[in-house]
Image 1 (cartoon, rainbow, N blue to C red):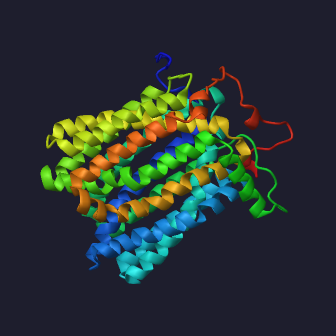
Image 2: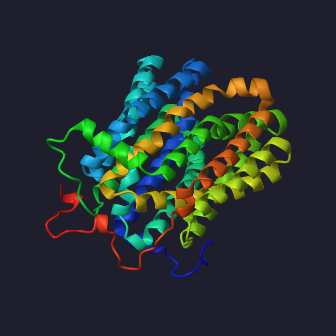
Image 3: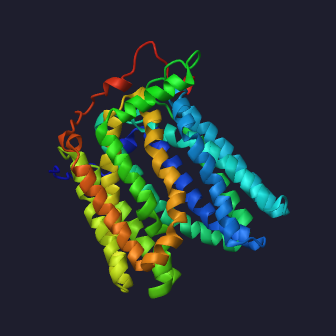
Length: 432
């Protein structure tokens, strides 16, 4: 089903395209910073006498406005130059992280200040994510698009490996406030990268446009693709049952049956290695039916959850995590590339926001259900439920005729996609 992997030049071709290289650098920096703050923020709250419940409240304060404003962000990311939307979001979030660091250092505002600041952070993040979903094909030529998504899929490995180490060291050496300031610096790096990018195409004029009509047009574009609607339904299943297995129940199993945090760190490191292997592998794959291959590759991921549920052997679980990370990276890259190629350029951010909304809204629900599911099923039973959800998703998606019928066409070197083709009268976004 997939074409052979060829080994050519040592540097991936997409990295020879300056704008994509800058985008990748900025995203890698941001992901490392996110990992740092996810370590530092809970420790900061606990250090000021906060409870675990207050840690959850601060994290929820970020998630709720993100979910509420995601569709708004999608509309505006299709109206305005996406690079500028991302740049504004980075500047605002970086400034907020510096304010959080200052508030912690000066002991000002307490928990409520953190809740307000993280709510503003989540609101700014709601504009960044839809813009990112539409900007990748504007930074790279058509023949290098899948390769670009493959490299982007390796960035979580950097967050796991580098971000975890930097976060731990920063908290130990600089304290939680200093570590959060380090996260602020990563936004500065990302903003500098975005400032020097040049992107293909320009959005349609935004003045005198009706927000409801733009939103409705995005919904029609999204809902008219049955294969995409079914895929989003599966991503909601993941948010409810699968991601809690990784983020909440997995650490609990490690604490109960393995060697605690050190064992789970080995498992997460396995995922990081797998992300790297998968991202480098997928760059040269050319499957005729990318969605079919993408979802067949989810089956080994279910296997990882089964291994986690039944075995106390850390080495075996870590090995399964490497395989799971690799197939997730390949599957996700094929999916993102397909969606990008099938959705018109002027609609990508709106369609991306509709796609993301379900999982973003349901993730807190899934996390809130952890106590109930583990209470009824035990931790191992809840992991089994996650594995079943993965397999149900695979069957549901592959049973959809439009998924099996969708075939990929791969552009030849030098070919430019029609929807981002540069026009003589159009200026670059970087000049807007």
